[in-house]
Image 1 (spheres, chains in turn orange, green, yellow):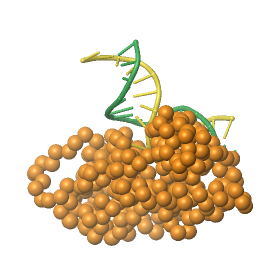
Image 2 (cartoon, chains in turn cyan, brown, red):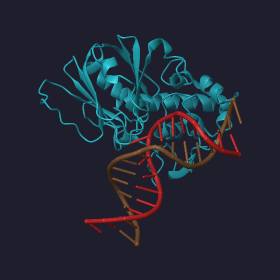
Image 3 (tube, chains in turn green, red, orange):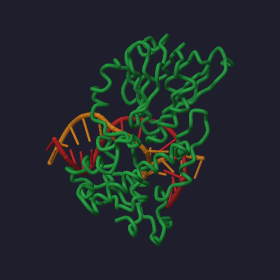
Length: 285
DNA sequence: AGCTCGACCTGCACGC
DNA sequence: TGCGTGCAGGTCGAGC
């Protein structure tokens, strides 16, 4: 499910419940997420304070007063839900796929739900975060000021893959997934089948790279503002739906008209690297 | 080293 | 109604 805008929406929703708050009690109803929960998971969290809740690509990172960092990933179907207030029944009833429950000193109960269990939680010493296997190879944050057309072109210079594959690769740029890759490429009017290395160079190549970097920033910013996209699983932690799915220009719109100005094309679905790609073959070159 | 593809799971929409 | 098929916001790791 969740790409950068959904993860950022989740992070912002969790802030008031978790940042500055202490884990009062932690319960795991299932240990076998994508990877088993860490040993002594509850014991290593209980009593600790969340000093900061940040995001890197699609990862949520909670810095704990113990010196550990809790790494959380939502996989395809993960979501968090917050319930506030002390009206919790003595024996809390948990729903199907509610795998982890945090009771926080803020008064909030934070539940992690993930039907497909592709999500996970890990605990590692904070000093090892940047060199951790999962973190060290991640590419630039697309909303960072240092990310621009030149940086994108450089990252794509020596690859033989398509733009679709390159943008989906978290080592090239962090946080994009199937939806926002398609949406950014349509906004930049670039074909998902174009070789990513054709962003590198002067003149037209440079223009393509700048247009694509700008499209990535714009679509992610707009999607965050809309609270992400709610297709099946994504909800904001307060239970509200994201709204960006209403502003898709290509994703899941096969057979519908391209909305780009001056374009009379029809959106097509193709398969690249085993995943659906949606694009307009007329204006996206 | 770079790239493709299968595997990991559950649920849902579809056609027969 | 029931059952089989295919598809879904991700990504790791085996095997070219």
